[in-house]
Image (cartoon, rainbow, N blue to C red; front, side):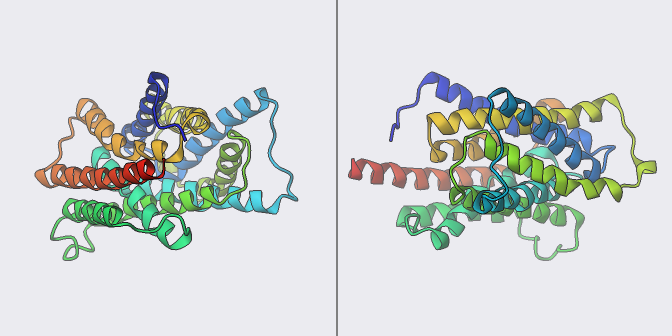
Length: 302
């Protein structure tokens, strides 16, 4: 497999990271006046429409309903892997800032490694991977702080746990995606975003519309979440999958917190305490150990 990346590969990588990182800033704006039951369907439907347009322009279509394996993957990724984490993360961001949410979600690759160890024979733990996981989870523990268990009923802690739950859903999504049937790159995102959109529609029915306040900022934020952080990100992801590898793309999970912190500072003047910085360093160290082992194993097999 090709390991040397071109400038265009890195450019797409950074653009994809920026699209996903911008979701936290736009969600921060949207949740000020809109409930998750409005934000999530708006984001999913907008993203699905963008990808449907691209798929139709490419002359492709969804698999037939007789393709049970493909539709199980589509529905699983649409519900557990997309609609549910969007709801958990959006709800959590009502009481924690965007850069903290991004740091919590950076634990998703760690959850993925644990699930993959028990699910796939070729992704077992190694000494370096175990060390990386230990450092990464230490980072999450530092981030939550020593009073986490004492303050279980605290709103901020509950919000952090909701976001961590969303990160775990993303890990489950990675497992589903890996063992899903091979479909054209644009088809699977169109399918699971459509399924997620349909799943989210009941949220609109239970919304108290008398409490909803639309304004230019929150409407543009929802449309941006759909068009940029979901639709455009899906298109960029499609090109990167075709040109590089899943491992390379997974590294976005560790660039996103940096970009989110920068956006959070300039947009909202958000700053993090020392424990968030320490947590970020520990998580990055864990990633370095895991990737170092991967490179050494790759070199040994070449």
